[in-house]
Structures are given as C-alpha cells and as structure tokens.
Amino acid sequence: MKARFPASGVLGIDGQRREGTTLPMADLDKITEDFSTTPVPAEKTVSGLRIALILIGVSIALPAFLTGVQIGDALGLKSALIAFVAGGLILAAVSSFAAIVGAESHFSTYMLVQFAFGSKGARIVNAVFTTTLFGWFGVNAALFGDAMTASVSSLYNFTGGWPVYVVIGSLLMVLTTLFGFKALDRLSQLAVPLLLLILIGVMAMAVRQANPDALFSEGPRTMSLGLAISAVAGGIMVGAATMPDLTRYAKSRKGAVIAMFVAYGLGAPLILACAAIPSLVTGEKDLMQIILGLGLGVPALFVLIFSTWTSNAANLYSAGLSLAATFKRIRPWRLTLSAGILGIVVALSGIIDFFVPFLISLGVLIPPIAAIYVVDFLFVVRRRYDLKDIDTRPAFRWQAFVSWIAGSAVGFATAKGVLTLTTISACDALIVSGGVFYLLERYGPRAD
Image (cartoon, rainbow, N blue to C red; front, side):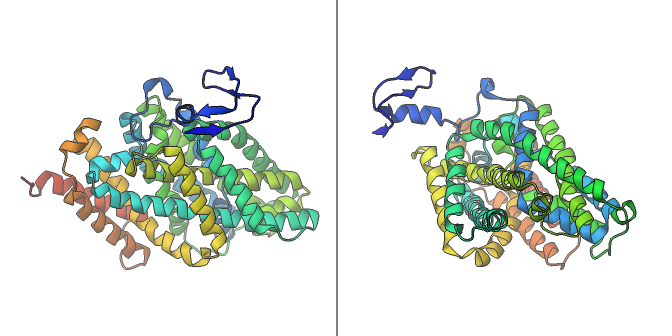
C-alpha cells in the first residue's frame, strides 16, 4: 500500500529527498513509531525538564483558567495562592509514583495495565481509558469552537463558523498526535514558553492597574481552603493515572520525579495564579475576555489556540496508545486517526451537555487503576515487567478487579459526601484500591 505525496518528492526518514510520487507505507510507519507496545529504547529518552514542559502545556487549558478564577474569587488572593501551591505539591507527590513506574519500565500506561490486570482483563480497563480520553478530546474541541466563535466575534465582528473552528482545530491536534511523543515534545518547546510569557504579561499588566488593598482583601469564603486544595489536586488527578505515557521517555527515575514537581509544584500554581489575579483586579470571570479587554487580540487568539492544542493533543495521544495496546495488529497511527475523527464527531454531534456527566463519572474509575499498577510493579513483582511474561500471567487477575471496584466505590462515596477521608475523592480511591490490592496479593487465595 502507498501513501501519495507531491511529485516533487518527499524527505525520507534519513533526511534525504526522494524523487517520485509515493512514500512507502513502511516509511510512514517508521516515522510515526512511538513504541506503543514495546519499551522505549534508552537512546530515545529525554530529560525530565522536557517532560515537564509537555505537562505544563497540558495544564495551560481553559478548565484550569476557570479553576483559578473560581478559587481566587472565593478565597481572595492570599488563601488562593496557598491552595494553588498546596494542591500542586500534593498532585506532584501522588503523580511521582506513576511517573517512576513509567521511567523504570519504559512501558505505556496501557501495557502496564496488561501486566496488572491480565491480558484479557486489560481490555475492559483500556476501554474505560479510551472512552474517557477521546470523550474529553471531543468536549475540549467543542469548547474550543465556542471560545473561538466568541473571540473572533469580539475582535472582527464576525459571527458563526463554529463547526469550521471545531474541525480545523481538531485536525491540527490529530495531525500533531500522529507523530507521537516527539511531536508533543516539539509542540511544547514552541508553545509553552510563549504561552507563559503572555499569561505572565497579562498578570503583570493587571497588577499595575490594581488597588493593593482590593487585590489582597479576603474573599467571601464561599468555599473552604481544604475544598480549594482538593479542587486543585483532584482536578488533574485523572491525568496522573496516565503519567507513564510520558515518563516512559524519561532518562531516569530522578528525572521523572523532577518533571512532576516542576510541572505541578511550580507550573500549575503559576498558571492558576495567572488566571486568578487578573480576574480579581478586573472583576471579569473569563480570562480570554480579560486578555481581549487589555487590547491583546492576537495574543488572546494565540493563548486560545495553543492552550487547547497542547492539552487536547495529549488526550488523543493517550487514547491512541490505549487503542494500540488493545489492537496490536493495526498500525498505531491509524488508531490515533480513528480516535481523532470519532472525537470530532462527538464534538459536532451536540451531545456534549449529556456526555460530560458521563465522563466525570468515568473519571472516578481511573485513579484506582494507577494505584493497582504502581503497587504491582513496585511491591508485588519488584520492578520486573517483561513482555515475555504477559502470556505466562493470568489472563484475568481477579485481585486487580476487586481492588478496582473497592477503590472506585470509595471514590464515588467520598465525591458524593457519603464518606470523608482525605477530602480528595481521587486520593481516597487511590489509597483504598492500592491497599486492597496489596493485601489480596500478599494474603489472598491463589489460583492454581
């Protein structure tokens, strides 16, 4: 099978121009190789700081801006900053365990799930991952269309165009994701420094206009400090479960942990503060409108486009890896393309308002999965995962599924206020599922 390209020729993977009109599909497979079902080779690994840059790009997103604004408005700046830093550090500490597993095994999350849940059991788990990830891709694509429509209308007095924005924006994200980790790496190196520069510049402009007494006054306390910390940590906790997708490229365990604390201990609080401070100064709740109000039309569009691009490409990247681990005979880039197209259909279908509650419910199911593969790798098999062992392990590990159910049940209960443990439902689910799995593996009955 051949992929068609212009007659002037194309650049081969060796960097040399090839004359002709076709590029062999084998070359396309090689260009898009991302080690979906095998360990990442040592020569392909990168520093922890480059992984941190990708994670910061994922964190710069419209939902994060909204979280920063809401917490700042509820608590006032001083308490909000405490919540941002405390929540970020909790998230960094929890994410570090999953990051270490990725850095030491060099496997994606979905291959780790095959070891922990069994080759057949993993199909159920990966179906939950895939549905959640491509679903959020569609939701973010729809939100991107809404924001682009409002921004272009404000700047150029042009209304309409929502489906066009959704499709074009989504296709950019899909094309980026086809080339795997290396594309996310390059995109983050380009976009993240400029995004941070714009956000910090907006914050500085707002501070210069601020009345210090008003800026540092106490908020109405419509939420407690503990709830705010929980919102910061819990809001990104689902992402911690898929951390091995990125940290499998880390050169070392130390580099992976550094990435977590740079991205979440420093980057996430800064991003939240960049949203909260301008909102407190202006009284406007929409950061994009604040940027437009400061006369920064082009930077506003840049923030909107690239913040959605970096965060949503990561959703699709993980969805593609999940599919590749399940359907090993299909080329990974084709699975990623299919997931992206399906995400676009979800965005355009108009079911977003009904789909979001479903995705939030699925989100409670994901953190326990991370606890299970972390405990399995670090404490049960003692850091020994080898591809040849998958077929010798049970195809369905009941201990993992019992632990998953227990952790998810506690997560649902604490999210609904029926129980109170750490006040962060995702953390509650992690602790319970990890503890139950360890006890079952150590003291539970064994299948013959």
